[in-house]
Length: 212
Length: 256
Image (tube, rainbow over all chains, first blue to last red; front, side, top):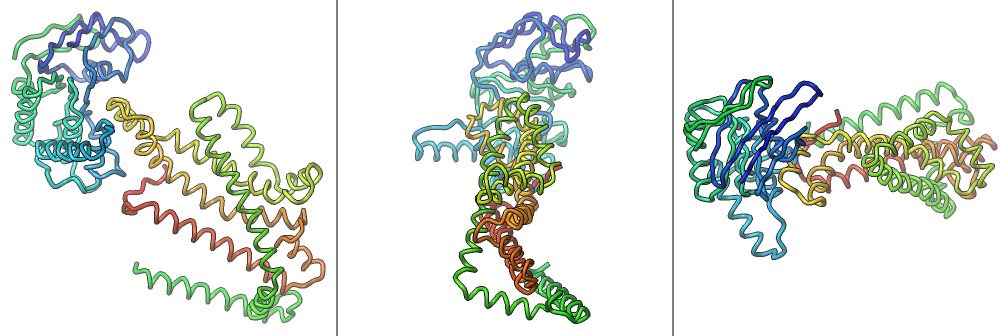
């Protein structure tokens, strides 16, 4: 479970991005976060991922492993797709078993994003949309109990986006993984999430949530 | 361009400059002042037949090589330390700036007074190469992509994996650039130090002796030896890098 109590954050003193934010996320729950540009949606994900520290308030999390699909694909340009995915796999001591299991989970993640033959390609050989899907495959390979998605499908066409969200939702529900999807698309939020959380503009009052 | 075409153009270019040399020597008309390429090659061939040539070349090679290796070792260690401790960078930076700005001859004279002639070429090579290595590596380490560092942090990559997959590939272009610059500088500085410090059995001492006896052919022959050694070093270095680097050249991220 994830619980945010009166969470505040500002990049510069006196200019809060998030103010007294309260939010709970149950185990296995899929949440969509919506709100106007600059209201702190990405900041919220960075705080949850531990990349930023709250200015005040608390962030309680049972999550031991959090995967994050950033807005940009953020793939290692000098590694192939397969190596990019392998890079986030945990190191195991039993080499033979681990190698077979790793190869299987990489193949499974690539199949999920419909790029089963992309393993040997370098990021420079992929289109923008393909890179985004590989970034999602990396999060799937990593597993974990919480997945953060920061508008990852903005560059994809509507049909592919809907298909990926549906596949991802099914996978997350199967595994019981919680997820927070930041999006501007209402239809994406409704298709993916159990609940939509509306983040107000940075200076407005604390936020509330509603069922989709 | 195909490799044989490249090689042919290189050979033609070398042939052109040898012809220019031949023409210039012919124009001067005094082999005591400006020997022809043929005379220099013949002198070099005669020198190569003597055991002294190989001893002298070997010792100069060792002087320069050990200077480069020490500079690499110290430069890498310092770059890692200054990357980790910002305060240390502030401390090291003025020292490196002074080393870069100080004339090589001043260092050579000071070292001659302090430690005698034997180790001067090695230390001079070290002093010339060290700032180049440190500056480039420090820059490379600091310019690691912050977005990829966040990926490594979120996905909790173990330290050794971060170094292997993020730090080393990020720093590599800076390291290669530093080494390429350093190799040429190392030979220039090392031989200059030998000419002034005159350690026993070194190419620099031989060049100095040749100058004293107005033996221009030998001076050219020893200089040609240094040029060939320097080129050999660079080709060897590039060959090693090609072996280590299996990914396509267009994947390389040049220093920005």
